[in-house]
Image (cartoon, rainbow, N blue to C red; front, side, top):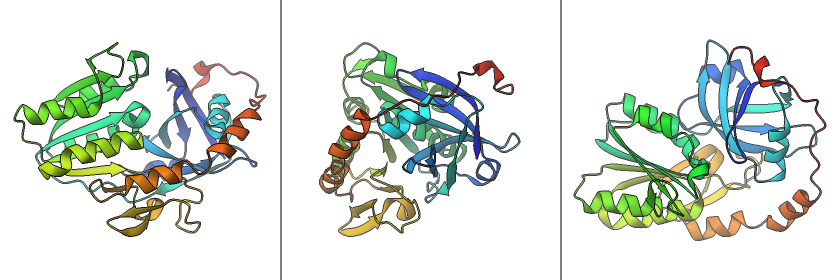
Length: 287
């Protein structure tokens, strides 16, 4: 069992949890994730490890409550426990001194950007961060991104905060202004990652995306997370989760992501919140 020691809602339906998992906290590296199960009847699903505190034996997870399993996770309170937590999984991000790097996050995709941005900065890179969201209230982790990056641009679809438009609009403006870009990281909705890859492809800019398709066991056994990269079948859980964005078959990926839409809709229709007694977040052991 893995105890939740802190929880907060950082944007509408977007939660930050600190969970006690000493072995994972000690071993995790930027870009890796966990697969968890809320209770003994729940499905397994992946979440990126945003941060860790080996001294406290805790890891930081950020997620958006959009499906049944993440809504059940959001129902849990400080002191409750997650029944299963497997990790760290996946290959750590390849970190090098590339030069000028642009790290882009769409929505809660900004959460997995943070640990990678930290590692890139520690390696001596100059960082430009682009934080995109639907509207101002959905912009997350802006302060943390500003602590890491040399320059940060924020954009919203509706123009309620920062630039109006998509992360690709901001990235295009940076490139067309003559900025030398050596590396781009894009994490967020699949259409956003595809759009970034298509923008950088003709310019030959190295582009890395983090894929999160249907994932069940996280060890390559089930084959549910298979993706096509460079004409070859890869498993996101053991071969990724990061891949060359110019080689990913996004059309196939998006079709696979829609395979279980009907089942998910039915699961949400039957959703019932946990009946866990409410606890005060002040009991968060000093976090």
